[in-house]
Length: 348
Image 1 (cartoon, helix red, strand yellow):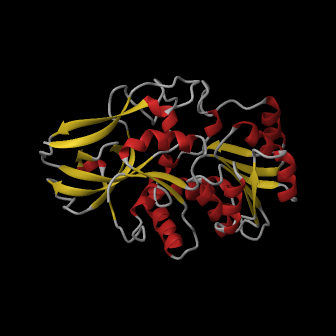
Image 2: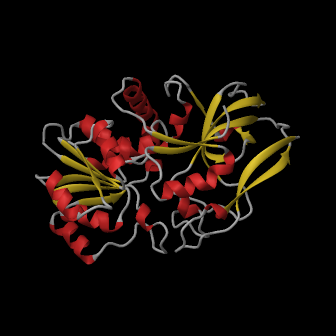
């Protein structure tokens, strides 16, 4: 038996509520490390907090591919760890593994079929990257741009990214630049983030949506209009971007974080004015779900790994230490407290 710390969902914020750290509780429980055939015993290294998890705090997630977290049960999500004991022929002791269904625990007995082995070299030794640039956010950025963005090198396109300093947006903007966009403009929530986008990630410009008129700033930084919009936030910001898009443009509908605390269907309904703009200008706006492109994940990770190793993509992270801070890290991420990917380090 082993003392294990775990995070359980204590309460739900309600569909129109704002999550608070008190929605979560850290327990210490005794768990057996005895294994059945096919299982492994893993020590958790890093855990991920992501915007989609807000939907899992509700009784109904509103998405057929997401199950709600259950009250008084251990929370799960993206995680990476190391195998400490194994009864699985495919996973040896010392192997680094990852899963989308990783329990928020310091140690766990897991079915090996839920785990994918990770080559640490692919992550250039940074195992937390498996949860960000070389995980779901990175694949969402790459495949979102490639499948829905219709970027054509040499055609002088302008791409705008909302939530641009987050885990997905910070990668998507760099991919837009690498794939041939002439201008890449990021929207985020602070002057510091704007400066980071330009000086560290190679964006053309950053716009702080909390200062001044966003439409005026977009006109200034996108003088030839907007051709591709990578939408992570929805709401008024997206209405402003879409109103300035060129005919035949493309909206990559990735996330709607500004709407997640509201009791709305997903994707949330658009205003009549925005719907009319999309129709009149023949702008495509299709929901993008990275899980629909599983067959392209391996090739995508190889591409992302190459870019990271060669320095063509820079990875930003905000790292919090300790499983007791999972709730704080999640709530901070939901209000823009992170630059790049928000991860929580559980052990060395």
